[in-house]
Image (tube, rainbow, N blue to C red; front, side):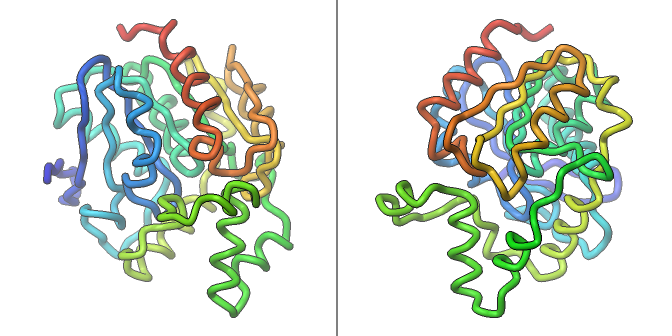
Length: 261
């Protein structure tokens, strides 16, 4: 296992696969790099780089505040460890929030940017409805788990795919890390810096996503100069997995026309 160490002494576990131009893949809240396992091979033309956020996977799990902006700093630590000057960045869900900060705070490190099922957060972001919140916090944990799956995938897909599901959280995370991740995602607010993002940007969202409401996609695309917005019809939050035959080629086509500097 490979590690990079941050300025505050946190060890970050990272994973590299393949050759070609570097592509950073950033997963959702309270998940480790296995989020990308079902689709990572779709990006075999790239040197894909993943890492476990602090609090997840093989990384350290300090009980201290986490932020999406701090996670972005951790991304750069990993790139520095690998000697990567510039990479494309593809973030989904909370990973898209982290990716926004990478592009805003470290513009020289980002070639092209893809923001999937993400949000600007803060006062301008569109929050999930109370019905969704209640479904995820109901006392019956099995029912809550099923509700999460149904927010990620369509009923038709769930009927033919029994798992394992890589998008429903890192089961080995300690409780404090889960709370810290939730707070990091909830505290995200990139609205003021989005106009400063200079990287060519693609915003992707499923039309039926209510976990991170689809209304956030045009907010991001309208705020980031020159951003393109692409919808995946009928997709829920985990569009990149269930609709991989549409989503992956869409992202690959976007990246192909944007060589790294």
